[in-house]
Length: 306
View 1 (spheres, rainbow, N blue to C red):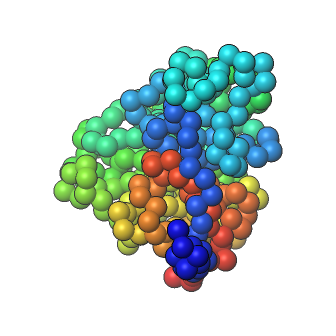
View 2: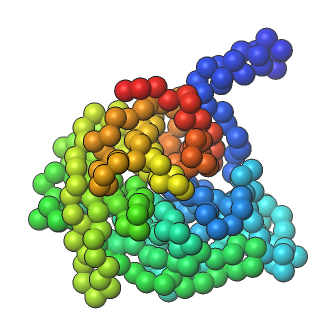
């Protein structure tokens, strides 16, 4: 690469406000569907694969490197033979139907098995998992499973495909859901809108009915992830499309919990392929992940007023 070309690439990165920080090379992470940063353990990020995999969570550091308990490092070595590669933390007694979202509730991980491409599932829900120490634990059980359903979905599949979900977040102790919409009941046709729901109850023996808070249009893509800052100062959501996915930052409301009515700031994420995950690195910086194994970093200062 010539110096001129290299300088041009660096300048483009600065202008875009985004930079690629790593590429995940762990063989078992082949379809990153969500990312969230630990609030308990330093420099730990949790990711998961979506449908078609076994129930594992993967702890990574900020360089995208898998974290392995010291006592297991001699057993797992090498990257070419999957049998010799650390598989991640196994979640016992859990089922991975379509894990599409992760969130932190203090020192508890929320796993959203809420992927619903055809809008026909009636077994949606979330697992709550006491966050394991990734340096010491390689398998554990969930604390609880909460079944959920949308208050306004009356048919399975629905007449309007607005009941898929790849984005959950927590705020003031509650769990929230942002839906992913499709046009004309076609899986591959995105509709750039979302609906925000809250889970007000925590039943384990029947469905928790998600209460609709707000609908928002014209997001520039379908919503594939969301996260609230560790200090709860704001929420960011990722609206993914093939050309330039849009990051939306909403400051926390002074009253209530309706982020979508706040005045947002936006950022166009370019050349990020199938961007599926976003989380706060800190209150002013975001990490975006895609299914092509890349991580990008974007500062809030690069966002513009909408």
